[in-house]
Image (cartoon, rainbow, N blue to C red; front, side, top):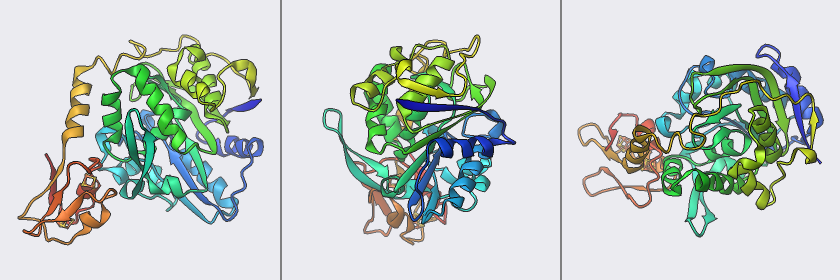
Length: 356
Ligand code: SF4
Ligand code: SF4
């Protein structure tokens, strides 16, 4: 039987719930390389409730420190609006400070791995994720206009740097296929522990809705399907109706049937919880967002010859080796390789790179 912990918490006493999570789901971390992955959708203030709250990240980092790992990395790849602003996305919400010096821009280095032959043969995954011995995922309790909810499984979408996320969004062609792709991405590296920030959750048209909801809980599990089934139930949504959970069960990642899940704590549906208005169609039918996704996918970096000093930093740092120096000593992008992560723009010391 899988277990899900539901523990009362505030942002002032989060550590108590985190300690309890590690008691129920013990991890041997001594001498291990640990990656902690919060949900950092985009640059925002902590009180907007769009990203994992820094109090939760800090509590997990401080707990992990006590378990004497060989190394700790805190990182994520933000979404559509902030591909080239990884540090800013962490800093604006206070997550940089909460990471206590363990922050790393994990979008700067990635490795190609086999993906789904019927859809896209390979994807680039942040190397820090693939190299970690232990991955601890810190999702946020939120709704999502395309997938109804965003929880433990969807938090792993951030292991993909850059515009691959937008590309997969677009090419999936609809919410059902997109939810299946989320499971494919999740399976590339199943995290070892999930600790969810449900102190303040989000309802309405997430994942960046202004409708916040005081829930006052931290959830934990070592199984994402079980955790997301509990989240769906709390949102008033039948877990078995969500394609993301159906697909996850089909491929053997766990079970969403509540009779197979031991709840440690009290499971109560949230009264009158507001699900996204079009249940899975909100983002798809929003022409502005669709146009933005398409534009971001098509953008590529260009170096300004007036500003570029040919230092080569962008070439060294491109996670997929898509840049090379041309005969005029200007970095040139190979559009077939570029994943539009915008790391080169972020890293250029001369601010010579623009996106076109
Ligand atoms: S990092 Fe900037 S200055 Fe250096 S080669 Fe690239 S574009 Fe030119
Ligand atoms: S060329 Fe720039 S935007 Fe494209 S993959 Fe490399 S670092 Fe990312």
